[in-house]
Length: 447
Ligand code: HAM
Image (cartoon, rainbow, N blue to C red; front, side, top):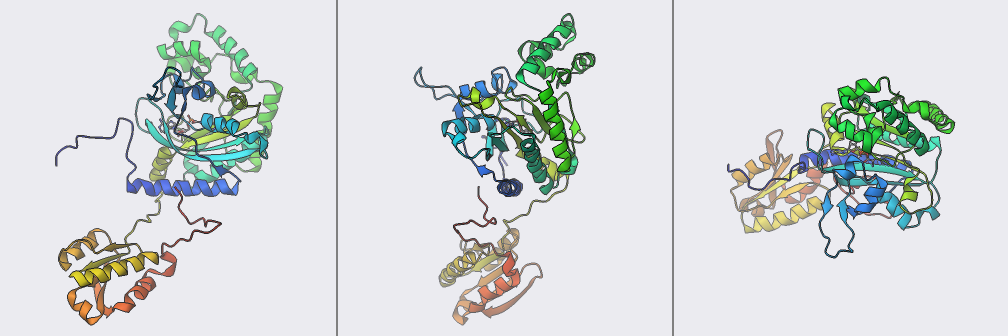
């Protein structure tokens, strides 16, 4: 076979049908747990004004400084610069302000599912286009909100049967004042020691010193052992908030480990931060994370309104599910293949196919002009459970052949019996039917 000349761009991937099974399964768990806890779905544009990300996430974060995908549609000098969203939170908070959602009963609980973009160096578990599901609770500052949000996340991970592979890392990074005092102390501590820092951390010491705390560089970690810690700078209110959160997590039976080095890579955080890490690989490729962002809404032009949220990387969750041997149900099976020979048979088959599909039977057939034998081979390749065969003879006799592809047995039946027999064999509970009601049934697979 010749090599295809076009390929997916670096750091992106096609989500092929076999991956969609996992994605659909994850979305289903997300929607289910979201509705149970009163979250409503929101969709924001895939691109937003770059300023929103600069202000929200922070101009000196890796995500904004190095990883934004710019959308080059600027035609006039006054046109805003747009960037593909690297995450949902800033866009959702922009939407909260823009639509005056502070008038709604608070807290407003929103969730979103969709692609995000970061122009990072691609590696295992790190893509330039990836999918997140994201939950936000805006409008109230109370540790019970933090606990309940983490509870929803842990329920989703448990539904997907990967919770026991992960550990919740928890920290409180205090207020902006606490952090600026701490940063001053950290910079003091590093005076004279800068030479021993790797290049990347020497520049972080200038631009975003807190990032030193979760640095993966060994030299930095060694130096940090005798550095002041952020927890020494927390005010009483932050300490009390954190203690209360831990009590609530205990009430909800959520396991966690305290991680004083967890600061997260986005500037909007304050107080609670958390991540779910793989028990074995730790900080690398966290499955999800989030935290409180009380100053963000005001930064984006709204009235001061606290908020908290988290997001999970869906590709990383799929990876965890596969590692754990979790099978996503395959709903794309073919139940019936209808094979036919001759123009009259083909017309009858079209009707039969339409009837079967309406009743919720996954049906293929009436394809092309091949011999019955090669249509049978095709039915086998499609993995059809049953085949219905209608040749010229059967049309004349008003019969049809029903073949059980697994048992390898077939029988001739009256054509009117074909549909009821197929339904009986498949079982009414296995039919793929749906009804659009005012109250949509949960079985419906939304996007
Ligand atoms: P984040 O930690 O930057 O937080 O991303 C959340 C999750 O998205 C990560 O834990 C990871 O699973 C996934 N992820 C991030 N980057 C990539 C990538 N390049 N390739 C694959 N997966 C990736 C946020 O995005 C915050 N907005 C979370 C939040 C919501 N905080 C408050 N509300």
